[in-house]
Length: 426
Image (cartoon, rainbow, N blue to C red; front, top):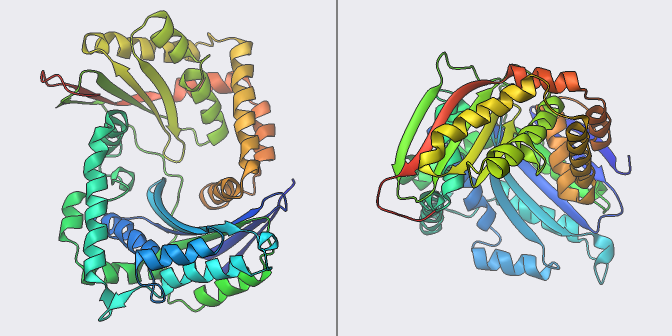
């Protein structure tokens, strides 16, 4: 393996993973606060990470912080939230050029790391709480982002479907929380949730890139060591229980093209087996859904499969004329039965293997890609498994494994977004 990876525990529930490869000319430092949340905490943590990203006590405005980072050869801070099984990971990160590319050999990585750590540990406070005016601006931005998600009907349909798929499960909580919970959130409450996030979250830190990390690692350890911690362990792989009878939800929206999302659940926990099956079923131009439901029968505008392997869920999302909804659903299920009967060629299996092995190799193309890979493998799947290891495993998957995956999937949820006779946008 070209990159040099090292992982260590630095405190209770706090881990740091470094991935070094001199081919990279950038460094990426990422801090992920991973928690099992309820609606209020999801809203609060999402808002808090946005607040932390924009300022700190040394650079108390978004403008001042951005200008300082720009002087460090265009360094930047980023924030995101993503799902890990029944948990959510709230990410704060920084990226910069490696020190060896600085014109006067400045310690760019350490300076950028200090900025990130100040955002986390020394936020911009007024009277011991988040600056109220800045807090309200960022809260409104987040609320607007949530409200604007409806403009992307395909993504919105998937989000709405997941609420039913994961009903009464933590995975069903929206990533950014809800407008209702955010509207009630005050700077005082948010600051208390911020302290709770530091205290109880599992914290996964990654430092990846082509630079010298020794001083950076020491700097990070010095700031995280000694945190008061009360961490509870969480299982990241938690299969979602299959409903006794498939749930069916039909909602009316101002759309011309209906959206249909079918969710299937499995009891298989092998991510490579499920991924390869999904590619063959609906993830490639040569897949069953694309070649039959879309091209041959023209039952939909698009029809694709994706998996949430930590939860054992496969989603089939499609854009369909309302008059074709029933036929499209029947044909999707028929194609799943075809796969379960072994009605696919060796060429289809080989095409999927070629595609997935190519995507595995692409993880080595960026420092951030490798950081994401190792976080998933070490934290979620609890295995020391490189992209090269995954390639070898994919190559060894047989027809029988694909048939087994197809047979294991059972229909759990049908979500349909159809028109309300107003004739709206897509």
